[in-house]
Length: 402
Image 1 (spheres, rainbow, N blue to C red):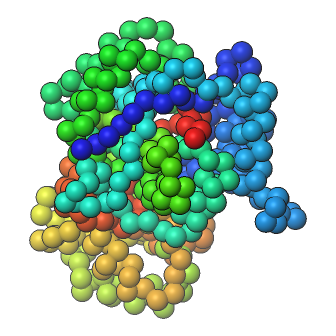
Image 2 (cartoon, rainbow, N blue to C red):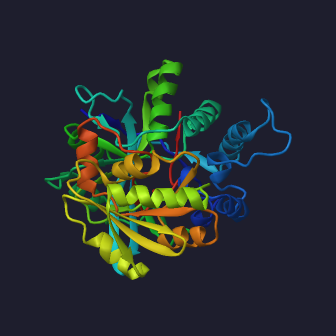
């Protein structure tokens, strides 16, 4: 059973911070170098200074971005910029946004989730993606330094009887504590719930749910390892945002692959190899690309390769795995000398290939949320960067300081 509890969240003090949009940030793993610098400029109290601090010349074991994060947290608590709530609470976060001209809203709540080992026989918490060692090492250094959860793990559950949704909606009738538009144009509204009856109802309703992790696999695994290291029950929970699988605002965007480091001879060899493995079709434009991907049947995988200003559609019949897994196994893994990057932005992918920064792009369909759930509940994992849940949950609305 999923075990969640309320907590005394540490939040930016409205008496000290007048514009909350200046101090919040996206999750650490989607912040570019340019955005990191912009967030630094936005406010001396922006959460990015702890979440994804800048490395400085002369950094060493005693002075580095992790020790600076620790010092920021202590200083901001001391001067009242960050203030811990006096009552244990659960927090509601509403995100309103437009996608392809349609207005959407996603309702979620933030609580602490008990950390468990991933075990499909015993656990109620399921991952869906593999993780990488470098991000885990980075997040481990940060949590050991600051002893706090800054950004929440993003978790999904099924609210078939709408019981949890009904509880949350009733609490959203009051004026939100925070009402801001973030740097990506998403409106975020935020409420605190400290009524014990309501908290108990939420905690009870989630107990019989299976939870799968959408974003934050690295943070979850690091949090579990950290709790074992500390051997204290208070470290056995992690800051988590929960939202409904069946909600209108749960969106998964495609995560395109950018492959670089290949010469013309290698590209020519790749084209021959792809013609053996896939049914290929020449496409004339970006409009044709979208139409081609959109016509994929449940029994087939479709991709588009963009290289040398040409689009080539690939069809794989009788698929028995996820599209991104097929792309990894049949297109990426046979390559010898290459480097890889990922983007949800189709135009960016095309532009970077045109600039010569990358040799080609693999343009994909988004993974269906039901496919992700099925993979997770079967105890399987998808390749890294298979899904891009949108919008991301802001970091800085509330944090958990142990």
